Each structure stands twice: as C-alpha cells, then as structure tokens.
Amino acid sequence: MAYFQDLREYLKFLEEKGKLVRIKREIIKETELHPLVRWQFRGLPEAERRGFFFENVIDVKGKKYNIPVAVAIHAASREIYGLGMQCGPREISEAWTKALLNPIKPRMVESGPVHEEVHVGGKLLEHGGMDEFPLPISTPGFDNAPYLTAANWVSKDPETGIINIGNYRSMVKSSTRLGVLSRGTQHLRMHWEKCRKLGRPLQAAIVIGPTPNIGLVATAKIPFGVDEYAVAGGIAGAAVPLVRCKTVDIEVPATTEIVIEGEFPIDAIEPEGSFGEFTGYMGMPGIEPFFNITCITHRKNPIFNAFLSQFPPSESSKLRQVGAEAALFKFLKYDCNISGILDVAFLESCGSAPYLVIRMKKSFPSEAWQALNGAAAFAPNLGKFVVVVDEDIDPWDAESVNWALSFRVQPHRDTRITMGKEASLDPSATPPGDQQRYPPPNGCSSLLIDATMNWPYPPVSLPRQEFMEKAKEIWEAEGLPKLNPKVPWYGYNLGYWEKEHAEEAELALKGEYYQTGEKFAGRRVKI
View 1 (tube, rainbow, N blue to C red):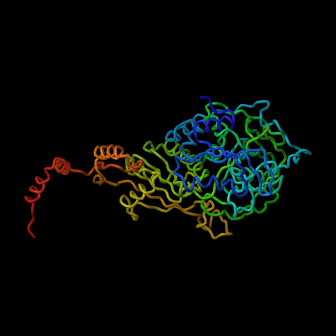
View 2 (cartoon, one colour; view 1 turned 180 degrees about the vertical axis):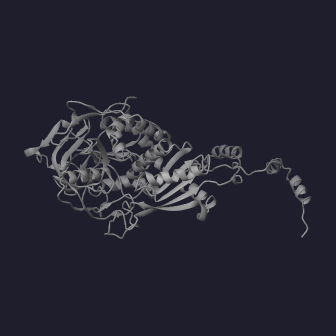
View 3 (cartoon, rainbow, N blue to C red; view 1 turned 180 degrees about the horizontal axis):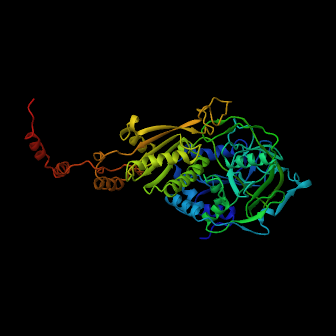
C-alpha cells in the first residue's frame, strides 16, 4: 500500500488491524488519561498492547474539549512500530537501514490542511493559545505541569540550513511559552548554541500529529547534519510534502494536525522540570532555554497526539529502543564494515539506553572488540554496559544474555572500562540537584564486555531439537498452556563434542547404555 497521507489514515489502519482502543467515556486529562494507558505497560504482555484514542476529554475543572487525544499509537509494541514503517517487527532494522541509505528529499507545496486554522498576531490567543488543546499530565502526582511528549521539534542549523527533527519534553509554562529539555550534544541544543554565538534567536516549530515516519525519525539516533525529512521520505518511499510556517523560516509537514511556531531567546534561560523520565525516576529541575510562541496553526477538528513516557517499558522506551537499535545496526554493519553483525538490542526494561547487547557471528577475535569500541563511540549518552554475544544468544532476553555473561566471560580478560560518556539523566552519575551531564574529571563510563566464546564449548545441556519438537506436539495435543519458547529451547553442538561422545549418546537413545558402562569398566584406573 502507499504510505499514509496523514495521521487520520494511519489511525484507521491501526483500528483495522485491531491495534487501537477507542475510549468514549469522559476522561480527565490530568489524572486519568495517562494512568489508564500506563496499565497495559504494567499488566499486559507486549503483544497485547494497543494504541488508545480518547474521544471525550475533560480537565479537572470540568472543561470539555472537542479535540480527541491519541496515545501509544507509535510504539505500544514492536509490532505497532513496524506498522508505522509498513513492515514486520523483525524487518525494522533493515527497513531503517534502507531509509538511511536511500533518503528521499521533501517537496514543497503551496498549502496544506495544517493551515486550515491560523492563530497569529492579535488572534494568537483567540482560542486560548496552548489552552485550546487537551494537554495531559504524564506523571500525575509528580509532574509540575502538562508536558508535550510527542513534540517533534523542527529547527535549522544556522550555518548549513539543514533541518533537524528531534523529540524533547516540553513544559507548558503559559498559553504562549514552553520550556524544553535539550542539553549538550542533543541537536536542538547544538542549533541554539550556534545561534547564541551568532547573536540571533533560534527559530523552531513543533509538529504534533504528523504521519508516523516523522515521529519515528524524531526519536531515532540519526547523525547530526543529516536531513531528517529526507530520511522520513526514505521510510515512506515518497517525498514528505512540506509547507512554510507563517512566522518563522521553517518548513513543516503539510498534513500534520498541529504546528506551534516560535523562537528561543538567547539572552536568558529559566527553570524547567520536574518530569517523569525514561530512567524510571523523576527528571529533576534544571535551568534550560525557553520557547516563545508566535503562531499556532492546525487542521479543523485536530487530533492531539502524546507519547507515553516515564518508567520503562513505555511507548517512549520502545520508540527509543527500536530507533537506536536500527541506527547503531546500520553504523556497525555498514559504516564500520563489521559484516558479522546480526542484531543490536537495547534492553527496554533498562530504559533503552544504558544496557546494549550486540549479537554477531564472529569470524576472528578482534571483531568482537571492533564492535564494542564502535558502539562506545556511537553516541555519548548510549551504552553504560555494552555486551557482545554469539549468534546463539537472544540479545533481547536478559536471561539469555546473563547466561552468556556467567559462562563465557572472565572479567580480568574480557572486560574493559572506557571513560568520556555523558550522564543523560542517570541519577547514579551525580546527586539530585547537581545535574552535571559530564561529571569531572572524565565524565561517565562504559563497561565493555566480550561475552563471545573464546574456544569451542561442549553442547548446550538441553534435549536435542527433534525431541523438544516432538514433546511440543504432545504438549499442544494435551491442551496445555500456550508456550512462548525462550532461547535456547533445545540442545546444540558448540564445537567441542568428540565422535565417541556422540556415539555414546546414540547408544543411550537405543537403550544400549550398558555398552558404555562396560567400556568404561575396561578403562578403570587403580588408585
């Protein structure tokens, strides 16, 4: 099928696939909306998670909104993430690689649905500015305001003009002012720092409710200086149609639901936070740039979109997990020329950033360390623990990885610590209130672990595959609970298994194991 024309077409597609829940009852946006969606991440297996569409939203004071809210529609599960790319869950990394290697430049159009309503100048507040929209509180009881979570910030490099799209939490401070958390090497902050040196404000626009490829690009680790609209075009297989903003020199998707235009002053910063973060802890307040709104445009009867973030797993952790996996997979396999790379996995239960596992088919010993060093260098805020495993290990299953760590690693030989990493909201890096992204003297660290086999191993101590498959047939015939096999689920040879060992095992299968006993008696040693 052709790629989605707008968010509405995508929502219809999700509903047809059985991946969208419609909530028709009144839902209070501050206290009920996010907690309701949160339950599926604390009480359901991933395969059963769906996107939510709230049709009847009110606030704690009883105000009714005629704008529905869509949550968890991008990445409630890996399957839903794949639907946004029109591919299966196991095809995502290759689809991302194809998009990164074959970008399609966007195309300009004269007008689009996003400009059906324009609030600017004296009419900026005619519908209340930010108060027009049903802005939910993500972590009721702890967040200090509603935050935009599916805020796809679009800005231009003031030196090159190249567009960047990034997702950053955005605190609603007034009807015309937002805060944003964007620090250090994050691309929006890099644009702001460049503008500060040039002595001019940074213009930007927030895109809310575009086609899913825009949201996926905004949350992926795409290298600085790459035109991210072109990568989004690569995902869709067609150029993204753009229109020019009304008050800033920025282009935005023509069919998106809502756009908020404005600029960041460069002569002042102010407090922002606290907000529930991907680490599973509250992200504490800091002093950050702020954004003054100059124009709001949207479709008639727009749809508001939010991501579910906070404690992992969440929609945010799934978005960042899959996007980072795909970007690093492409980097290691194609840019670093490590042909044996099979999978890259960020463990979602750990926030999809600190714990990274690389599965590879190692051709020679140095390849494992090539992959480890490449991963450590890829991004300053990814990979506190980086592990390389063999092809028989499931990198997304912590139990499988822990088995490799336990019996394929000698800490004195197979581990290294490298410095120079960033903290990235990690509360173990600095005490609360300190907020140093690069603690002195050498920043934070990564532990690199080669958990691949250094020599042939004995077989895995499970029944051979044919016996496990036969037992599974009996299991299912007996009507026992549905199985979800974990790797490894059968025994296999890892290189150290002599012909005599195999012969003895075959004798046991034939009931002739006394022959082996007699043979061993003949090898008796007197002591």
